[in-house]
Amino acid sequence: MKKKSRGFGVYFLLIAALLGVCVWISTMNKEDNSYEYTQLSEDLEAKKVESITIQPNKETPTGVAKVIFKNDQKKLLYATDITEVEKLARQYKEAGEIELEVTDIPSENWFLNYLFPILVGLVVLVFIFIMLNARNAGGGGGTNAKMMNFGKSRARLADGSNVTFQDVAGLREEKEDLEEIVDFLKSPEKYVQVGARIPKGVLLEGPPGTGKTLLAKAIAGEANVPFFTISGSDFVEMFVGVGASRVRDLFAEAKKNAPCIIFIDEIDAVARRRGTGMGGGHDEREQTLNQLLVEMDGFGVNEGIIVLAATNRVDILDPAILRPGRFDRKVTVGTPDVGGREEILKVHARKKPLADDVDLKQIAQTTAGFTGADLENLLNESAILAAKSGRLFITQEDIKHSFIKVGIGSEKKSKIISDHEKRITAYHESGHAILFHLLPDVGPVYTVSIIPTGMGAAGYTMPLPEKDEMFLTKSKMLQDIMVSLGGRIAEELIFGSDDITTGASNDIKVATKEARRMVTKYGMSEKLGVINYDDSDDEVFIGRDLAHPKSHSEEISGVIDLEVKAIIDDCYDKAKKMLLENQEILHSCASLLLEKERINREEFEALFTV
Ligand code: ADP
Ligand code: MG
Ligand code: ZN
Image (cartoon, rainbow, N blue to C red; front, side, top):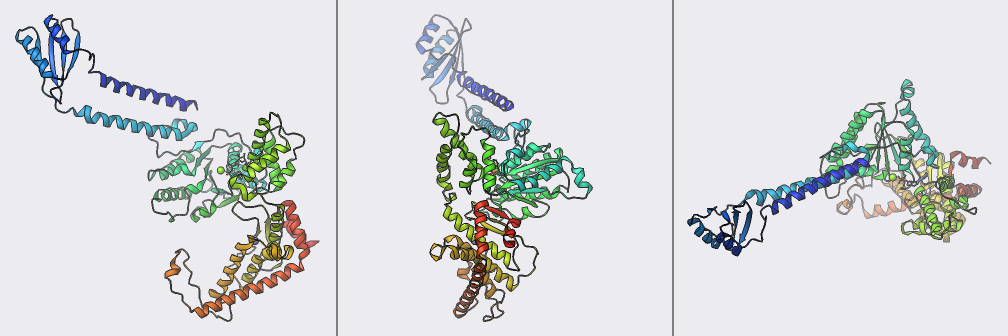
């Protein structure tokens, strides 16, 4: 910080000096401009004058008369009619009393008129550049803030971050994953000995505010190695080539400091899918991304550099970045469950005095869908409320008030979930999960969650496929459809058909697509035979359909639709029957979900053994 302000002082002096020079130049011709014609004729009369130099201006007859007195004094006379002055002076010259010199009408002074303003302009421009750069280079880099360091990386060496894993609440598995990396950097030999290949890149992924940046900072605090941090947007500059050169510089710097960690926050700014630049002009970003990929391929295995990156948007990342040898380890940082929320609240309540009536557990229960950042904000707002009313501690009432402010606050509206909605979601996800479990070719279930994902989904059920299949079989596809419909069926069974929600629209879409593919692409319908009726192979070109002739008749279209419906109806009936047979588990699964919000494989499978 000190360094930075000193830098600014120097610049300030420079500018001041420059201004001084400007002022001086503009005044140096005007030593005394109060001298007048009448005065001059008096002085001539009194024989005080030694010599006169007459300089006509470009715009004659105006001009300047430089008058030198016998006592060496010098005066300038700015005349509106210099010929008048000349006439007067000539009289005295002829009388031999003074010397007179008349200069030519000056040609244009190109230096003062053209070059000088250009120079001044240049100096100002350069100054602005330096200023901007110095600002962005930040304090930590210090010596980096040289002139013209556009191509230099803007990575900052984290200065002994005081965040540790203790400050990161919840996120147990995520922390475990990352501790491994910290451990590798601390004692690489241990891993190299057994021939382990440590991932080069780790991608932290999850909705905003869930603690990705915090986790990275904690790693910086835990690992005793240099930690370079840079934000994806720092690579994106106005000038083509700057981003790429920054990447190069960053990795060069890192290699010098290995073992070390590079942290690229908000990597989506550079690593967006290539070739989707709307309206062109994204060459710069592509170059930067290419350079990043080249660099990541460039350093060897176990060279001691680990690239950590964070993003809210894995969906828009270029697939190349996720290839093995690059960011091959992905750590998903999700919205916290009840337990996680309570822990986060505890962490943030550490420095805030709470009244006895504050029940963090209860707050955790009512804040489903809140991220760490939301919870931090909640407590902060409560503290502000408490301070406003002149108290030294936060009461449960303060928190309740802030809850409305934080939760209902414009964009977070969708996150406040009523108990009823929560119940519906719990049954919906249980429906999916039970079918995953019971059907032979799908599943097993890895996680079931009713924590809103922040991306519009109210919950999710995640299977853990055990085998990697080359082919989809017809029965597997049918089972997939049944699972997709399971959520909706469970809602119907429990809440009746009046209370079914719109939440299943995506499930229905997935099921329909699958059924349609079976009929039109894989020849799995007996009525239609083994013929491809699917013309939508290149979904990339939106609007292509319009110009594209259908490869089959309207009649066939009708049959396709009927066949799709038949498949869906059949799956629906079978799935419904299975769920009806397992209604007890449906109830127990839903209530376990309501209690825990997120359950893992063991907890889920235990439901079937009672
Ligand atoms: P992200 O980078 O995922 O968008 P941040 O790491 O910037 O989110 O988190 C923002 C803030 O939210 C943090 O500074 C911290 O105060 C709070 N926070 C988020 N997650 C946690 C957590 N697991 N434990 C403690 N605080 C958290
Ligand atoms: Mg962040
Ligand atoms: Zn669903």
